[in-house]
Length: 426
Ligand SMILES: *Cc1c(COP(=O)(O)O)cnc(C)c1O
Image 1 (cartoon, protein in one colour):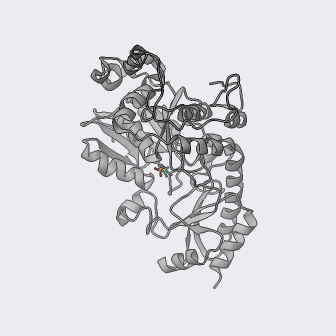
Image 2: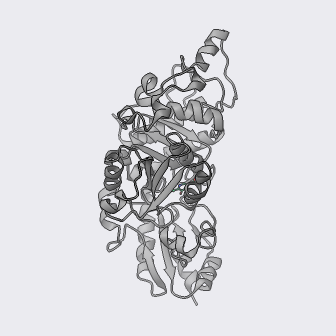
Image 3: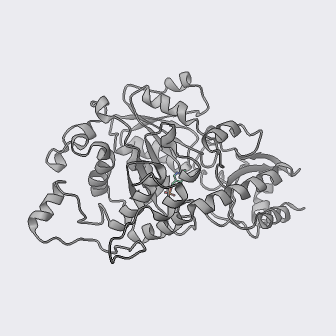
């Protein structure tokens, strides 16, 4: 991976590197399996003595080319694609946690991640403490326990749109000898590269801006290679002590900076099998080629729409970190000087019915669960994605019951505004 190129060039050129006579465009390796000449060659792969492909549940060349592009965009050393963003977040944490471990996470989280950490992982014996991301460091420190194994947060929380003080969270993690994992889905590496601010591991739901066209569900985990697992040997025995399922290999000793991703691939993917299909990886790659063009347009349109809503008397409040006066404006300027994302949240004056009526009247913007694709879309989290939460949990996650989430697409901004205008008319 080369750091020679600027991010726009990386979007196009990184990943697939064909040699003489090979396809210029990333091929879809639509094959479950890969051929070898001798049984010894194959045996060495299973011992992790040689690297190579043998079965697509673990690794596939199409996926690896795309993962390597994302690693380059984030400035990391290695990456792994997963079948969804949920799988990425689960693996990212489970790769260094086990029954008896504890994690500290921001309470401003995607609803799916909140359920995963708060309910499902609890059943595996991994406890989470949710913290207010805006709390001062001393306050956050109180959530850390002796068995804490990582700190987790979202760069821009979905749908609360809180902007993370990444340096504060990195200090919290590192002063306690654990890595910071950041879900960078909404900002994308075009607007923010969390490794530059001290994060150790980045995850993505590639389903959103990276794919960008609402065509494929997918996820990705990227490792910066910066966290020193051996310095905290006893906390991360899964990486620093022999893996009996691979004849006693020690990941940190054998793979150095690639230890974390190698373990995730050769152990978690092998055993849990949530690989992204090579077809989807191919489509994701096409999305990535225009990420640097789409993300700035999403931000430009979102700012126009946010300003329109802010000046509209039917609107009770607007939350968009790009708006001057927003609580997160300064943090956004620091960590994302070129823009945040295309997602806005706002509330209408009136009751819940006002919100529903408004949404039903929209013609261009569609009511969908999805966010962050080329088409403008809208959702009412309290009645859709976050409906499992109590009112109290909603408020804790930064989701007011009247919150409308508007994912501004890359259509003409005037057309989007006209649609909102007609839907708000009496
Ligand atoms: C959508 C989303 C996820 C989950 O990703 P899927 O691809 O839907 O599984 C995780 N984190 C954030 C911030 C998301 O927006």
